[in-house]
Length: 395
Image (cartoon, rainbow, N blue to C red; front, side, top):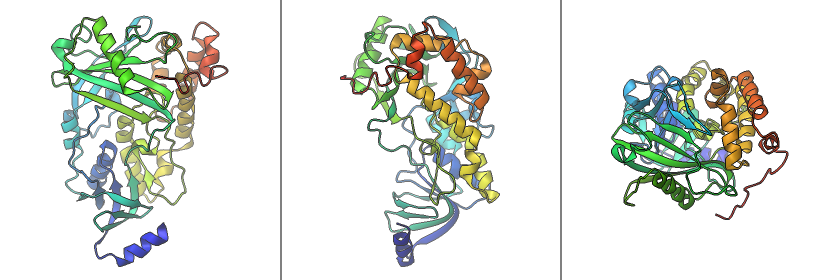
């Protein structure tokens, strides 16, 4: 492929050279292009629809966001979100929903050269576009998101948007449900588990999103929608059927890139920044943009800077957590989360957020398994039995 690209390059008239080329302008790509331009680098930003607002709803813990991100990127702040396992708990750690237009504006790429085109070929230093332009850069970042799902471990969600007034019986104004494991979704004990995520979006609406984590191939949208409606009905919330909705369905097991390979640098969810146990990637991507840019300016390998052995070990341990999640029943999931949410603040952050706290993560994973009851369920959690419990489940 490299020889073919070089041959085509020599035949092109339209060739531009840059310090950094970013292929894909989702949040991770726009952040890279934005911060590289702020750092004084010559930047090419490539996407077939560069001005499109981000389609999904993005959320994170407030303390995960980098200091350079302006406050208007946050649409809704939730001071103490709720989790329901066998009991109700408040997590005293502020959480937020990001504003789609606010985040888009905060990551402005006015100082970059923008190509509204699709990348046909992406290589270590060359990007060939479908408009017969070739972009040459000292460093190319590939931030085009995730490849196809197939039978990989997945996050699946179906979200329905309702007004705050309609949502009030379940989600009061300014509050949010991060995990709701109450048995109200109509699923039986012999069916794959799912939980509810429900937060206000800061625009007068609330999203109710039934979510499945860790199943191979994911959970179908029709099943998730049925479960969401069952939960709402249990709280007296009836919908018209015309409410807007969104779907999410993507793999959770995208590995970090290997260093020392002559490839474009994968970044964002494509580059291993998708959290295997939660499905979150945006906050980690935003936080790692500056270390990547700093590595480039210093003449270092950005993959090596982003993925030291400590971070790779954290990813490896989180993958074990993902496999555990994907084989539990609803009752076992509730017991496991009961154990997890009694762990220390450091332990919870090590699993949910920290990029390289391998000691904290190892401790919280061990303690969560050790405190999950009844004892026999620990065998499922660590994979000594029922390793493929839900494989090819006939939804």
